[in-house]
Length: 299
Image 1 (cartoon, rainbow, N blue to C red):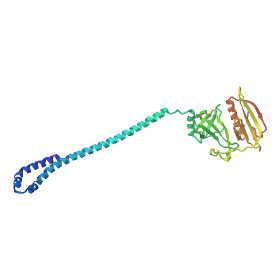
Image 2: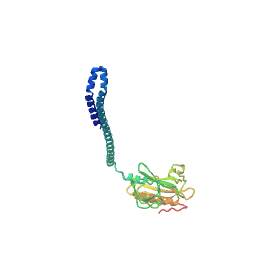
Image 3: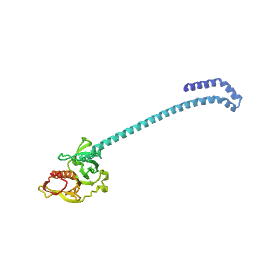
Image 4: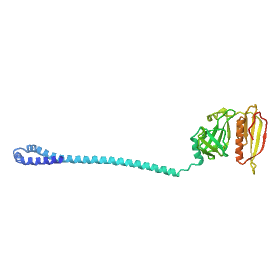
């Protein structure tokens, strides 16, 4: 449309020049140069307008081209950003895959510790390495960074609270619920000795004064010694009655264990400890009994 207008104005200028040629020539002779120039200004304006329209058309084309290039630049920038994000995502995935392949595999202890962590505070059914079952169902109280689990049994009537530790590599976990216990474990070996915690019912109270049991010893009501064949190593178990004659006894082992409870609880603990010694290759060599108002269930 602009091109047609430019052609039309050019034709108008040419025709006007031809028509006005004689008049302009006479005017040049009859009038001064200043007046002649003034007469010619409309024609000059027309010519200038023609060239200006040409320049405007080119400027518009250049602006359109510039806008088009700007849109292309924006699209390229967006595509570049998207490509960068994709490359970053792929890089992270590759790094994660590499880390997964070079990561040290978990040990048995670490796998067991992770499973026990999921059930902290829950009761658990415990079996010894000979498949005998514990009478109590202790709580999974704590799992340390060193993969040591603490099995806590709170105080009950006639007994004291205690905790048994085990290295997670020395246990087998059976992920089958039994009653209120979500797990069952087989304890092949305890870590350290059984620790008496006194008259507490919560694991959080283990550092309170009530967790320090007070027991005034009376006489020895049972003692036994264990020897390992071919070795000079020995172990002993002593059971003391309470000085006041109450149904309270203390089991003391040469390995450092100290447990306080009534005749039933101490008998169970004694037999459990005896099984531990026998499984370690010891044999009972001597045994002795003393007087007690309350019978012990030891055979």
